[in-house]
Image (cartoon, rainbow, N blue to C red; front, side):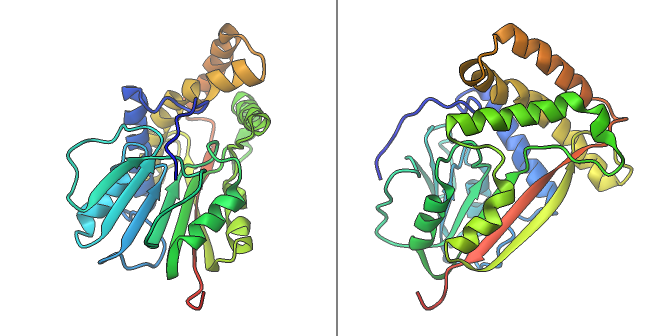
Length: 281
């Protein structure tokens, strides 16, 4: 696999503020899963694990801490991971969309929030399966890039709805669609995985729910959304859709206002899809 350097339209991974937001997003995943790091029914004791698009490396580090006999490799285009890590965890700068050249297969391959960074998901899933041991597992996790409501809240969140629509439109024109989580299950089945499961969790945009757990998740997800607005929007809107920076700032102010309005009961969905390579392959 070759090392690659690319200009990213989504986020600024070398920016300290964005790195903090990525770790916040990790915390929201932990809250949704009641502290679990993954949903696939795989035993990681003594396992080889690959984390695609590892970002700050927080998931890989925590897996390494929890499974000291496992070997964890995190891969990302940006070397933003901390230097002090568990001895069973290491990171490499690489591009998972280029050819894979690993000598030994993995027992578990994990990818989170890859939407907007992949041109060909079916090809990526095929590579993932080809680099798993027989019986090994893969899990991909992402958010659905659109809002939902059970009480008509979308009518009062028109700027958020339009923002999500435009982000997805621009990402498709760019060639790396953002809103891909709804397709993960089908793509994994088509790639030949067995025992494919999909789990969907509601994630409120702010602390509007009465349920204590959902309120806590919303309390963390609101700053996660607010802090991500410009990093997800500016480059796509100006370079792909032809907006001016001033137009983007005015629009995002309206989006931000709706995100912070607790009377608007909207949520997104986190999707966890996992599957197994056939034992007989």
